[in-house]
Amino acid sequence: MPYVNIRVAGKLSRKQKKKISQGVTKVISKVAKKPESSILIFIDEEKRENIAKGGKLLDE
Image 1 (tube, helix red, strand yellow):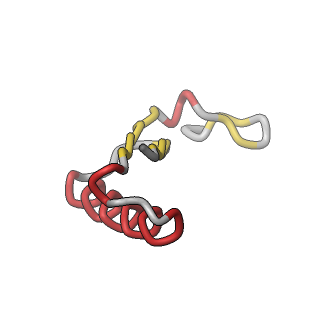
Image 2 (tube, one colour):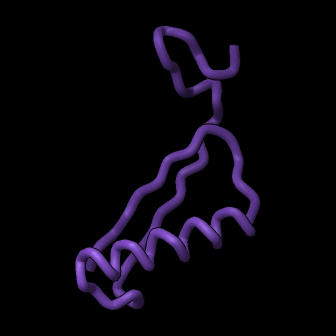
């Protein structure tokens, strides 16, 4: 059973999560030759204050 973990800075709308999940599911199914029903997707929304890039917090 394939699983995909997607981490994003900030929040996504329910509609965005649905579209991302559908697209990723189709790609994994096609490339890995797995049934769509077996693919799990986890979307983690992280506060921008908890992520840094280049030594600076994203919320700065």
